[in-house]
Image 1: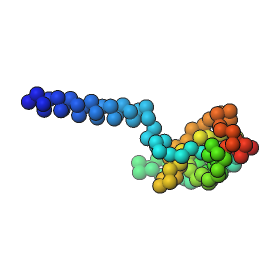
Image 2: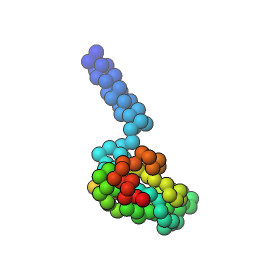
Image 3: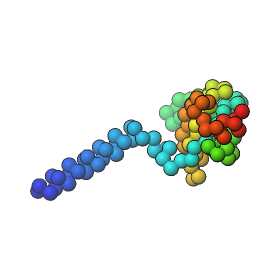
Image 4: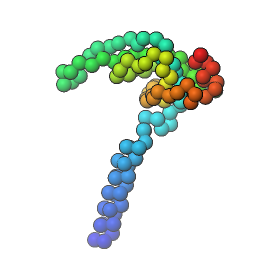
Length: 119
């Protein structure tokens, strides 16, 4: 009985830890390659309806991205809003999924070789 109780507590701690980690770790970025892009063009938009009937718009971007060594890769992704023109993004890319996440960054935070290619 005591072993069962201890095992149950350990399982609860493990599950709780995993749930808590999900709040602090972006799993879309784990194992992803990092590229940098600059928003230089207007997106192509796609309108649709969600399963609940509400309307939505996707903003589709296809831009060249550069890794820290200046190696280029096409980044094809969409956003839920129109991204600010001339904004710099850090983009997370996985071989099997493509772009999985992104966030806006300052130009000064971009590695030198990637920044040179973006200008």
